[in-house]
Image 1 (cartoon, rainbow, N blue to C red):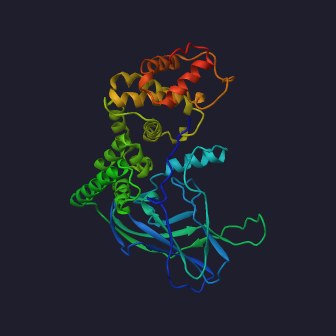
Image 2 (cartoon, rainbow, N blue to C red):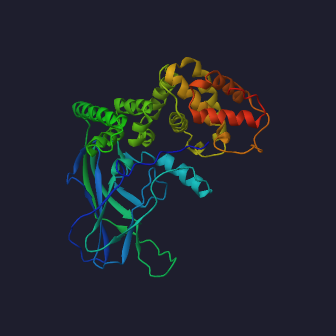
Image 3 (cartoon, helix red, strand yellow):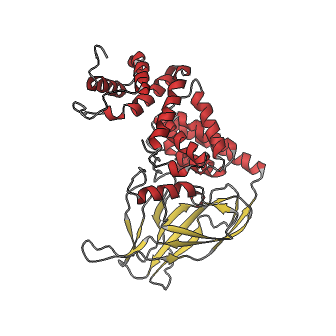
Amino acid sequence: MRPRIESVHFAGVAWLVFVSCLPTPGQTVSVELRTKTGRSQFHVGEVILLDLIFVANTPNTYEVNGDVALPEPYPLRDVLLMEPEKGWADPLGDYRKALFKAMSNGHLPINGGLAGFPIRIGAEPVVLSLILNDYVRFSRPGRYAIQVQDSRVTPISTQLFARPDRLILTSNPLDLIIVPADPEWQQNRLHEDLDSLAKLRAVIDSAARSYDGRLADSCINLRALGTREAGATMVDALRNEDLFSRCSFQVGILEYPDRKFILERMRDRFKDTDFPVTYTFFNTMAMISLLAEGHPDQLFGPNQEKIDRRLEQQLLSVVSLKRGEAKTKTISTLVNMCFAAYGGDMGEFAHVPREPSRLITRVLQVATAYFEQLSPGVQSVLRNYRKAHGLETTGR
């Protein structure tokens, strides 16, 4: 099993694409950098929204790629040129490097983002909005200058199947003033966001078709805040997978500055009697443990299967501590991971291993004991396994 990142929701977080009326400069094509609000001063841990404004004075000549992917691997399409070089870091730098290496070796370890789509640049400029915090985490107050070196724009070709070279556009410099995050500001921000998050959870649980989009701002704020309360909130949101996914908290956990704190929080929830360990929980914990221990190179490497087996053994050892729905979901997670090859219609399963491991045998025993509480899909996986190995299936 390879680490998987939930894709960022287009409506919720990373990129917003819209057209606005702005004056067209004299250049053929250019990009301008602004803050969305017009502000230049922000707290450490405050969300900073930037606008990339693409303009061209020749219509139907250039297009910009509105591709959405987070975490985006290196090389980035929007390279941030920062001055000074200290006082900030890429919160996903180690992950991006590991992902780039894996992709360069022919692996596709990430299910994420939307397919790239070209947007034509004309008299009315195209504006792409990004969250700076997903690329830069400020650790020190001060004055910073930012430029973007962008490679999203390509000339529009009239030749079929032609692949024009990307243009490299450099934006204007943008000055930002980063001030300390005083405790009062942090607490006010946290309380507002927790209130909005509770409302968003209620909306999701009610399966409402629409809701106030501003509620999703709490997700972005909590991901950026960097306090222990914010980190604990993201981990605890794993209890509600719809909320966790909608808020892109898996990325937020990987971006969090104190990964060892996150890992300890996850270990506590791992052993919590009433906290379900879902596949998303397992997958997130596998990644954060490697990052917290300084082994990002193992995220997508050949040792990943061994790491998964170790965590599966640990998960099996805590099943007896779980109760109610938490136990059922945790057993389902073990079944879906250990018997992944038996999902769906796999015929006679001619290529499955004939000798089950001790782990597989024990998981089968536990799952059989709670068979009636498991979902029809999980029950089907267990039946397929039994069929493949010629085990008795009467009633189960």
